[in-house]
Structure formats: structure tokens, C-alpha cells
Length: 172
Image (cartoon, rainbow, N blue to C red; front, side):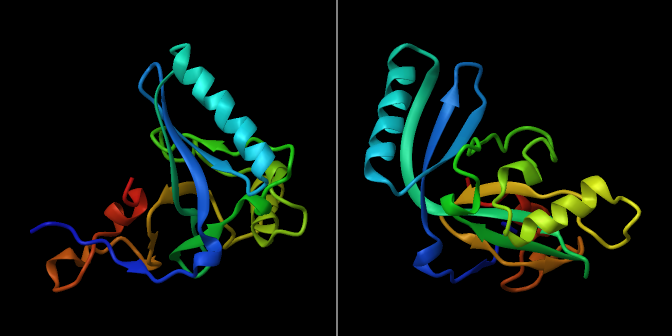
């Protein structure tokens, strides 16, 4: 039986433009691109130059969703949409999801000060004695936002079910 991932209908206001490119050693990178036309065009020109000089193998710009994926205090795997504006202007918005779990994690230093996830990240890294806080927040990209789910039970054997392990990887 093929695995079916459940997705949620997500408002278009959370759609972002992002670049997907492959580094010369084969690692995929996803980079959030801003809405400022001049900055976007300048960054796209930089990316194209890297493609010409062989630093990158492929480059495509897509519209889709970026989300933070984490286990919340209730035990649910939660998928929170992120936009370019959720990050500090000076922060790198480039993520490599092919690395091992946790290598693509958010750190509070790249989030806006008033962002709700920053509080959770702070508790994890600076107050580990607090029970029930988040352990890790990963950033993912795709054309649809996966549905939140509880636990690791494989629901794919039921009609319309899905595998939580497949939902983790999204639909790259």
C-alpha cells in the first residue's frame, strides 16, 4: 500500500517564494526569498552566477510553503507556517533538509524577537530543566503543509491514513 500524507488547506498568505538548488557535492538547499523586488532580483542574480561558475548544479524558484516542524508540549507533531518576515533581516534563510534530523534546526538567534517559536527555542537551549518544552524545531519546504499528527502510529493501513514518518519529510 502506498503511503498517503495528509495535508491541510493553508491560506495563500503563508505562501512564500523560495529557491531550491543543489550544491556541487549533491546536498539540496532551500532558501527563503524576500518579497522586496530589488533584493529578490539581486539574490537571484547571485544564485544564477553560482550556477554558471559550477558552485551549484541546479536552481529553481518555487512558490510553496515553509514550515517549522516540532513536537509540542502535548506530544503532537506540529507544523507552523513560516514566512520571510519571521526571521531577522540579517539572518541566513538557507536550510539543508537532507542533513540528519536536528542539523536543520532553528535557533532563536535567527528569529524575530517577538516570534512565538523564539520563546520555545529559548527554553530548550537555556532552561533545559523546564519539562514539556520543545526539543528541536526543523525547517521544511514543500508545495503543501502537512497535517499535524500525534505519536508515531502508522495510520497508512486505514483508508485515507498516512504515515507520520512520511509526513516528517513532506513532499520535496
